[in-house]
Image (cartoon, rainbow, N blue to C red; front, side, top):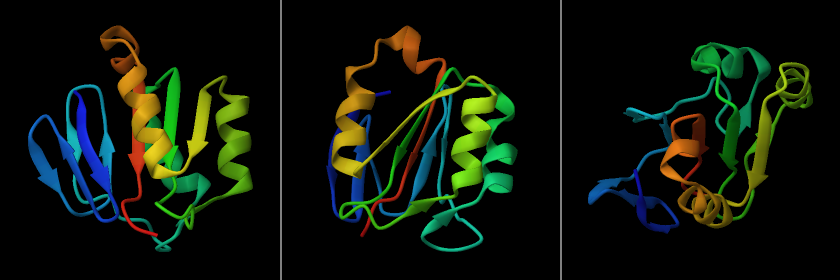
Length: 115
């Protein structure tokens, strides 16, 4: 998959537009991606999503970096030996696009599209 465009509130992936938060898995896109608390990713929500067992998790935390990641969620990733990147959504999209196709098959990308 390739991110063609990202700006506040909109992302285009392989020519398809999304206007809600999403998760990019190696073989599919989950839209919408909803959290129990709007701008906060909790450990339990992360555990449910990571049954795929990725080697890398990229988290785009918003245009203005407004989404927060639970400290316990970060600790969980470290304890599981999963590498992770937390960036503004713009930078996270760039990092995702820089991955090889092989690396994308071992990556999950969470992206909060707005603030």
